[in-house]
Length: 81
Image (tube, rainbow, N blue to C red):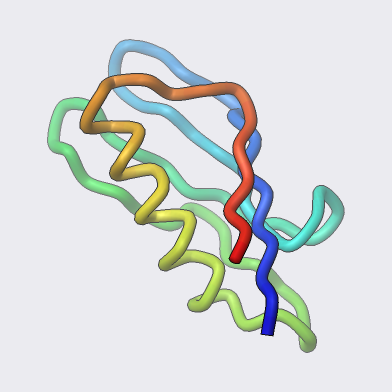
């Protein structure tokens, strides 16, 4: 099974960065990284009977954690495998 996840930065300031994530730009959830605490949290889940949110959230969280290591929060990225 192939997967495709798109992540688009919605907002960034000194305290946090917020991304939309999902299988496309119409079906998406929201994930946040708190720069002060280093915590990643879900702000809104994907609401779809066809796409399990946990699957997408975990992979988006891993990508966000990798970006946080280098403090390099790019505008848009994809996860493909």
